[in-house]
Image 1 (cartoon, rainbow, N blue to C red):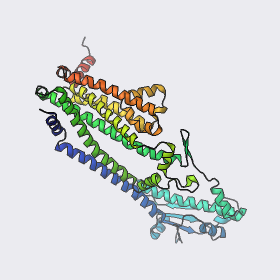
Image 2: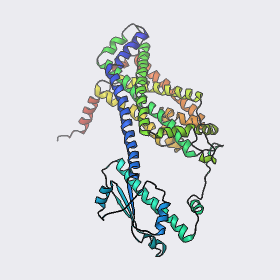
Image 3: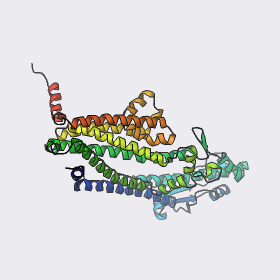
Image 4: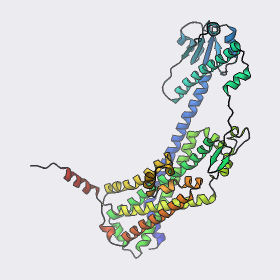
Length: 458
């Protein structure tokens, strides 16, 4: 029995119709969720635009101050109307509007002559819950804020003789030119835009690693434990083929199956993120390749990707090759550990229990690297986190972008040693009878713990 035949056998057992249906279903679920959430956000934006067109304003004050104020009001979507009664609900229904701003008589006189704050009535329709209703309320409130700004500007013009240019200067007295400095290099680009691009580049990889490791570990542990429980593993290992060949066939099949799962998952995640981003995805692309930092350089268009290259934080093809190497080592380590743990399983419950150590080891660095910079942690926590071999792959892209090559090469060397130790233990286990004598039974463990906690009868 050759390696190819063994690999086909393992692939047939791992990539079944049910597994493919599950992959496709997960991918479609993510795509649909992205479209639904993105549609809800676009609906909220549309509701905000509708709300801006559904604001009515009634001017009951005929002073020159109020007329000039309304002429200079920034919100041009407000519709000027006349009220027929004080029943605001009936008036909104008659006018087919959602919000109403009323400037009462004497408004201008209170501000100019009495030096008091003028009172404005604001009526808003309460809609049902949801993001769109909240956006409508915020849009109506923005109209009131625009009215306040126009009132303040008119007060400055009429009472203090301030010109429009002076008012504009008082609103925007500072013009910023942003630069970003990184390890002695400077680029004319805003740091928040560069950070956003780095975050987007670093988000996809952790998700891929996370799902890839969990899926590969679960599959190979299930395959090994099932064959051991069904007594088919003894028959397979007694065939005229080396146990090393059997081991490599199982690992190769698990890698192929995990990559297929990860492919479907990542396609779903990409469409999910694009669906949520909606029109914002185009803005992100413009920020990376177009004129996202035009204002930051005094009006000159700046390419964010070019700025990242000037700062030395752009990834080269060689960097991606190094990352792929570390990703492969991470996957190999996960598979080697899964082989050892899977061989210890004696029933289905024990498989689920034995999966927990890998899940914890994968999840801890995943969440830590998502929300924190591991290299900026205290030495104690840094040692603990980097002791987990999967951490080095989560932080690989960040280390490569920042030029922390000592940490990267140290992590790569540590993973090689860790993988060698795991493979040595796995090979020793497969080439001896320990494969059949090692056991971990969740049911027996539960019975023992119950026995220890059982009450003692006197």
